[in-house]
Image (tube, rainbow, N blue to C red; front, side):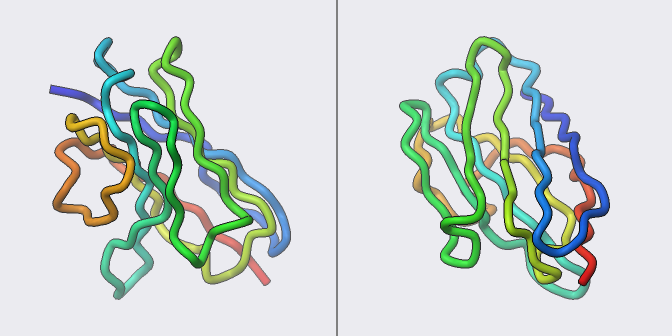
Length: 124
């Protein structure tokens, strides 16, 4: 079992920045692929970014160039730096873990463990 705890969400104006953190409970975190997803009201959960166990990163087109995913294996933590935020970024953001280690997985079904989510609200 892996427990994931997100933090760092909040309210920000358009053009602003937030950094989300996700701490994993398991020491084998370094071998996991990690992803960030988001879900807006009335919409399906969508892929945002992912990072493989080797550090290779993948992004949704909607956030490419604005968001950066990174990981610190010594701290069992993955981050999502969000810059130049837009109102359409408003959603609950979820951290997810994939024991296969791949970072290229973009479907929620490919991830085995999920955090509880953190709300991000971007005002215009």
